Length: 124
Image (tube, rainbow, N blue to C red; front, side, top):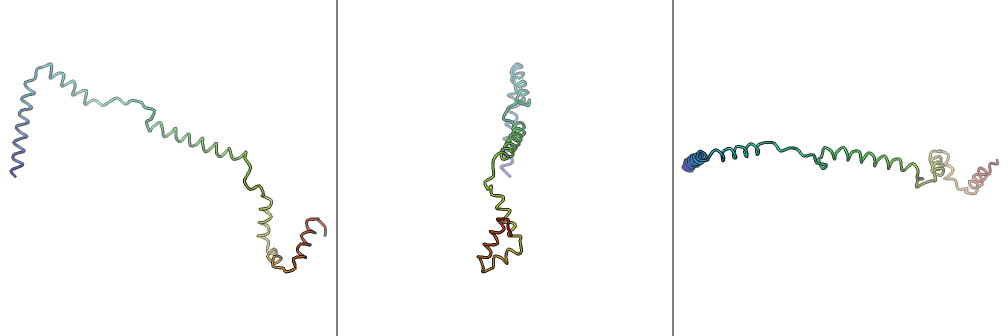
């Protein structure tokens, strides 16, 4: 409890000394101090800066949209990596055909080769 009483006494003495020194100042100094205080308390003018986030966010979104558009449209002109789409469709037909499994399990491969050759020639 002694410490708080000592602090209260110190605060009172410091306050009295500061007020006394402020009362002893001349009018010109007081005026300058009042103007300096008012200038310090005024809000700083906001300077427009190009790196302000409000301007960078829309610009970044626009750049991303343009990049996505260029990448999307750029792929139309180029060919695909796997141009064997006919082979892929033929393979899908084989997988979907239920009779293909039976033929694949045949032991007479000569007959299968002969049937495939007849089918390619268009003859019967």
